[in-house]
Amino acid sequence: MTDDELVLAVRAHVADKGLPGPASVTDVAAFEEIVRHPMPELLRRVYLEVSNGGFGPGKALSLTDTGRWFGDRADLAMAYREFAGAPDHQLPPGIVPFMDRGCAMWALIDFRTVDGQIWDWDPNLCCLPHALAPLEQSLAHWLTDWLHGAMPDGPYPHRELSSRGCPNW
Image (cartoon, rainbow, N blue to C red; front, top):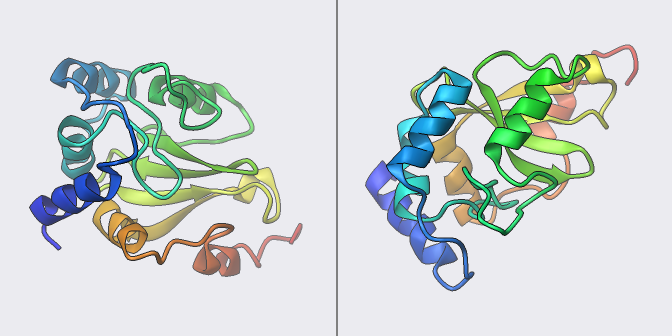
């Protein structure tokens, strides 16, 4: 699917969900200033053209506090600051937690990549030093899997196998 088709498909998928309206360009710019990286273009378009949060398999956090929380944090800035400031998270700059998957699991997106590579945070698999791992999946592929109902509820199957080398497994 093209980015245009994905934006339309996401909009249609969430049309009757009562989500907040789109974010503003100012909201996007303010968050990019916090992260110090530009937002991947597809993610920017979904926030600006679809909704300020609540989309995706586990409902992406809002860019700003909309009054509706789509996870344990009010917005992306709160989640990013908490992850970036926690010594046990070891989160590289530019990796942004954007979807609370429950049970301490998070989907994260890499603002350092043009296509928004998705990362996984799952401390339940073995230990905190191995909680963060790239999924080698772009935001476009991740959203396509969600739209086709192919998103797992628990740990990502290919991610689980990559953690088996951990001595704490």
